[in-house]
Image (tube, rainbow, N blue to C red; front, side, top):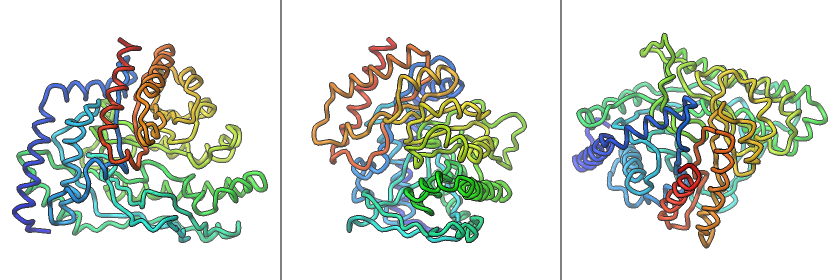
Length: 434
């Protein structure tokens, strides 16, 4: 779009100025420095974050947006999310005076089509994951069924290397328009946050083969599983090759949401020798996760999956691992990842074992159970008690901690629950750490 409506232009510039004013406040620099210290593994108070994800649709209802153009409505949403984070959540996320513009692109499939059936008739909705990330979710916010297409093991030969598809014309138009709208207010920069830098080898395997079937494969033909995961990992690395060769990568060492939760502010990235004109994987945060493997033993993970996932994480400058899987018994294996910096500790992980095994060597990325803000009654006393327990354990083991509320689809249309959770988390932090 070369000539946005005048009303849309004014709406966006007013919002951008509000973001710039927030970013200029001294407390924002304090937040940036605290996150950098955490990511360096310095001793710092635990960081508290709120990531509504699907519940952003209840915090800022789509009907409340004012821009008429669909692309600009998305930009409006992201600006409002930054303002909302500061004014409403009051958590430890820094707000920066920047506007990130993605590439108009996608990554193709791997040769087999995965059927997806929603369990209800709800219309899928699109939502952004974070104010400074261009990653979006599109979902009916309910369960879905995947129709696994890899029915026979010999179908593995139908797998193809995913291909990157970029629309340079649209990508250029977006960047030009952003400069026209925001220059002099926000720093406009090209930053595309590709899912491939988050990691999804195990998820893809489950969607292609089916969870029950793949579990049987692990016992019946582990050699085939190794070959299967190896091919998917090779495809994943090939996409990273394409992103590097096409110069489509961009830094994520600022206020961006990284991996499966956390903020990327870092003075260790990019490393010495970085060429600003050509970003490499080694200049970025990246990682992998294996939440679809819940239920397998650490030994089976180490034998069949870890050898293929480790090189993906090590491709990056600083590595993250995990999502919703309980990793406490896998930490001894994960320690072999040479650049590992952040480990996800989900609600199903043993926090005592995790804190003991992580200590001060990695960021303990703690993700308490999100349903505490989704049920009919929000039990504030129980939330506070649990967070006090978490902080007591992490302080005992001198952990470097971030605790975040995430993985939400609803807060029962009561966004104030999110602000209250942040307040309770900060109270618990003060009680334990002083």
